[in-house]
Length: 401
Image (cartoon, one colour):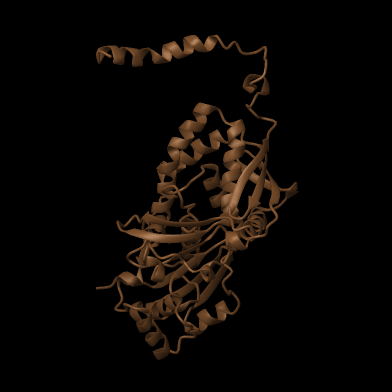
């Protein structure tokens, strides 16, 4: 027995799945449907989206430009933590979900809706990310997840339903994989990529050229940071979204940011994902470099110990959680002096740090030099070594060595 729903806010892209969902919601629940599209720089066609949703039955449509908020309030805080899931994934899809869901809840409140709906499948991570966010922000909200409810089991059955109900969707040849794009990255999974031994075809990639086809001339650039946040490229200050777009362009031309990994989904199975994150890869490397001369050793090592947990919380969908609040505040404390400039060299898939400087640098030439100095007594190292070796000596004596 389905619960009574009066009005639902649907996360709507205008593609086949969400177009069918819109009509299905009206038929199944007899409710009003508000269609909501988040513009996160996905470069999908937003023109005529409102008209399409209205024709399918939506009572109202919201198209929200969230690009600057996405970069400044989600990507940049994640960057400050150097978040990487399982050593390779820079979390481009994961970090988008809490913002999409947050705005969806805000619209639900504004519209007096008693439910929200998403198009994520029952096998993936996104259903968890959306729903944990919904419930964190509105504990009483009703959630509709059609892929866990309806009778459709294939794209073919969705197409048949769309034709039957004259839903205005463009039926194109199915891609041999699925993709998800935003300002930070594009991901590919499923289809031909389900064989982890098979190399992706070159024509799949969108944001980057192959390293072999990249320009033969290296690209040099400088990125300025302030308290862990990138604020300018080559001396030109830009707003967060434009800064990332600029780096995506530079990185893509040089074949930067391709990753092919098999990751552990939160729901339990392993999944192969291929990602392009050109600008994000540049920023990740540059941020690490400016930290290397501005962060205290023990602060850095402590912060690094938090990276796996911070990354898991994003990947699993706990952006709005008490533990993430604590982690974000801790990360912010570590970044107060992470300011300065990093110079990088981009060349055929490589993103190399070739210079770094900061007014808050802890790097001191007089101490670090291998030449003659007057500030460090090398004989002091003897006692330091003996003290640290004491437990090793005792252990060896106990063993009778």
